[in-house]
Structure formats: structure tokens, C-alpha cells
Image 1 (cartoon, rainbow, N blue to C red):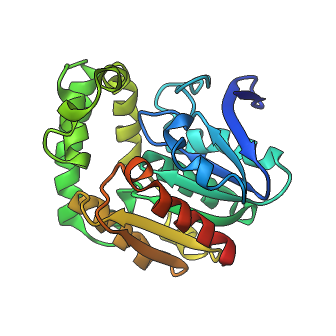
Image 2: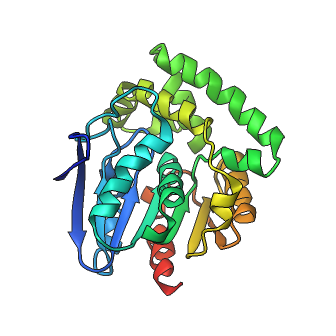
Length: 267
């Protein structure tokens, strides 16, 4: 792992491999940069691939204040992007997609292409007027965040099952279950942040570089709705359905994920 020192002295840790134009892969919540481990080997002959740990995860220092939100996460990633000295390709999965959108909105000229894999960007539903889907998700996740913050043991299981299907948590290896339970309170903060997004429709509409938004055909309906809403809000967006995939597509459909990222270079 390499360490990048942020402007306020905190550390942002990342792994780096490969050669070519820089590509940053942003993991979801809870998670670490290694969540992309099955995708990276499919890309590192075409890109210089960087996989940072988001603030508060893996080896990276937490945000200086609790509740800093997605924009604060993105500001840290944005410093790493700026340090590379050239425009980058950017991809984000789940909450990492939200972070990637904020990085793009803050410095669109630094992004050569953007790929989002089931971003939990509920703001898109609001901007697109899909109040029914937004309300349904809001009710579930408000309850989850309260339970997770209170360290209710089974709260994280319900969240995993929401995105991955019934009994998905029970099928996970015990070490993964333990990691998720230990990270539930931090994830609750990210969930709250994902419902407090304030990015404007204009910031999405003016991005004119290659943009792909992917969802799985076996995914939760809200993931599909968010992807489709982003496709309407961002004229440059290409919405891609990955056959048979659900929210864990970076593991189960890593080749399809890599191909979508590789297509960004074709414009």
C-alpha cells in the first residue's frame, strides 16, 4: 500500500499497479480498495490502476469530523486525483459511485471518463421526480441507519439482503460477516450521507465525457431506477444492464465490469 498525505496531514492509502493512463477505482461502503481485486487484473495492462481506501476504511485516516458526508470523502479523493498531474478515468461501485460523482462535479476537467456501478445516488430519484421509489428506499434505510448506529446485531444483515437478495448475508463466509458487523456503524453514516446529496442536475447534465451507468438485471428495483434516472439526467450517459448480475457485480461479473471501464477509452 502507498500513502498519500492530504493537505491537512491525514493519510489516504491506496494500492497501485499497471501502466497507462491513470484509473481510480472507488469502493463501496463498508469496504476497502481490495474490493476491486477481481477487476484490477483485467485492467492493469491498459491502465495505471489506483484503488484507494476511502477515509475511515482500510489504512486511510477518517474524516476530521463525523458526518462530513460524501463531498468530504470526495474532496480527499480529489486531492489524490489532482496529484497525478493529468486527467484520470474514474469508476465507483455502490457508495463509491456517489463519491465518484462528487469528484467529477468538483473538477470535471480532471475526469476523462466515468463509470458507475449501481451507485446508491438516491438524489437522482429526487431530481427525476421518482418520489415513490425514493420514499420506499428512505423508509427502509432510515430504519436501518438507526438500528446500525445502535449496534443492533442483525441490522447489517437486513441491509445486505436488501441489495443482494434474501438470505444473502447468511451465505457469506463468517470472516466477511464479521467485517460487515464491525463496520455497520460507519456504514450507517454513509447511508445517511447518501440521502443528503445536494448535487444539482446541472452538474450532471454538463459532463460531456464518456459516462457509463451499469446495473444488474437481477438487482434490487431501486438500483435499476437510480441507473435509469441518471441516464435521463446526464445526456452523455450510457445505461448498461449486466445480465444476471446483482449488486455484487465487481465480484460475480468482474469481466463485464472491466469491459465497461475499458470502453471509456473508446469515447
